[in-house]
Image 1 (cartoon, helix red, strand yellow):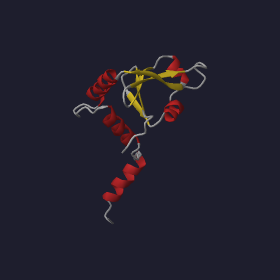
Image 2 (image 1 turned 60 degrees about the vertical axis):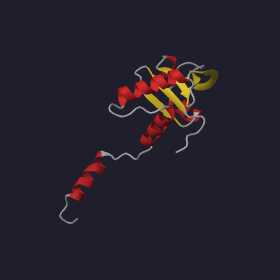
Image 3 (image 1 turned 135 degrees about the horizontal axis):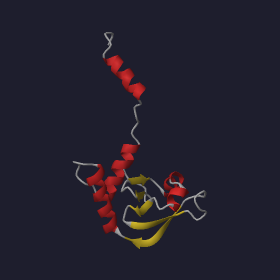
Image 4 (image 1 turned 135 degrees about the vertical axis):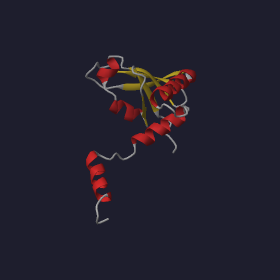
Length: 129
């Protein structure tokens, strides 16, 4: 899977990582109140370009994401490696591109609700199947 050039990796205070397929996806998802409160500690492009998250209209407004013109691929690599150590225990750490693909693929998987799982178990255990 090729990722768009404007894929965004956002790290929060809890060292969680959220990946968005575009600037538009990121600004539509992230809330201005969280940006204003400093919930997000860093945002990067896939290549390690530093992105600035702001809420210029305050906590009730919209989120704006801009390229800063600076790069810090070493910090991005460090944060991604830390994400793998903390949240994907036992898995080999991926680079930022592999990590972005992994998280986008995971988030795009259809989720089975409890009713679907129960129905599947009942069908499997049914004497008519």
